Length: 191
Image 1 (spheres, rainbow, N blue to C red):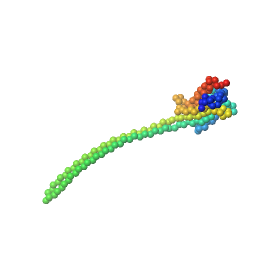
Image 2: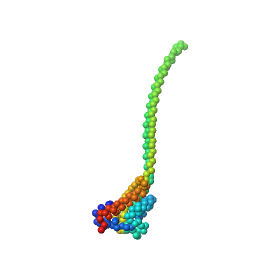
Image 3: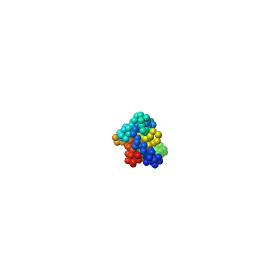
Image 4: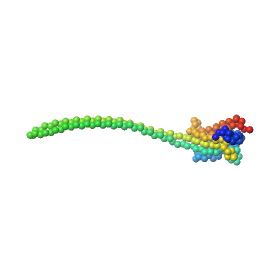
């Protein structure tokens, strides 16, 4: 939900809180073994944005980043096979034989004929493509001390030109939070 919708639903109370946040604690993310690495990348991206002071002490935080993250590496496999086979045969045979004997003399007629044809066409093509893929996904929210959600986002990536998928997701989260912070600050909602 964007901050604009939060303003409509809850008035200025939640919108006023975002620019007033000074210190943020990034909580452990759920979602598998790679969630801890994603947490570290989000901390780094937020630290680089210089928007908040990031703390490892929950007691000192004004707000918390919570959510889940997953980083998957898998192989996508595609197999195909094409074959064309055609055969044809033809055979023909004829035969006449006659043998007659009369008073010790023999006469015979013999005739043979044979034809044969054959044909064959074959073919085949097989391909197997394996592609290694890398995807990362994170859904995070900024929550105040009362548990009210001030901001949330879902980001995903297959990797960027100079980043891996997880680092790209962390950068997208930080950029979107900075953009929302600037939008609220510029709109004059802070009193």
